[in-house]
Length: 125
Image (cartoon, rainbow, N blue to C red; front, side, top):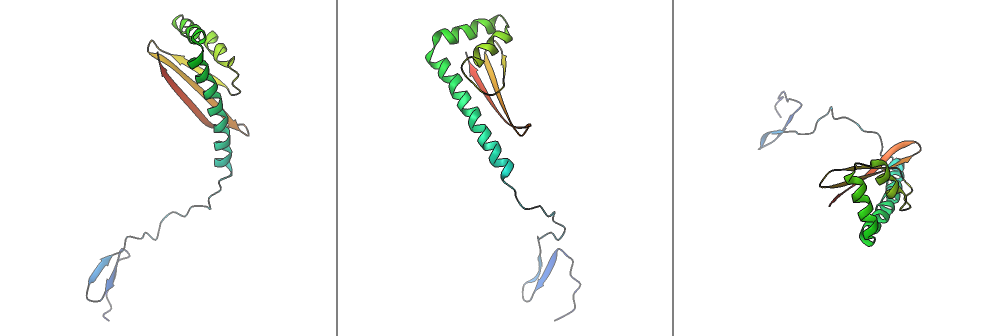
């Protein structure tokens, strides 16, 4: 075989010539995957989904509740709207924003004092 000088990005195959080598010898090495935090976040997110279901069920089954929320939102009474939503029995912190078109409800959860997940619901009225 001839002594060809090969660039790090190519190699020689007899009867085929030089072929590019797309492997990168300087590729970043990552640490082993640890799923502990990811699993805890998923578990915390399940509680957000339970809270979201409580809120949605209340909107879907109680016209009076929906009316109260809309009326207070029309008056830009964020405090009362938040209070009404908390009274549905949710366990996680909630933030409420509304526009003339609808309401955004944001539920947050944390694991070991670290914010891990957020669920945002946007409902049109």
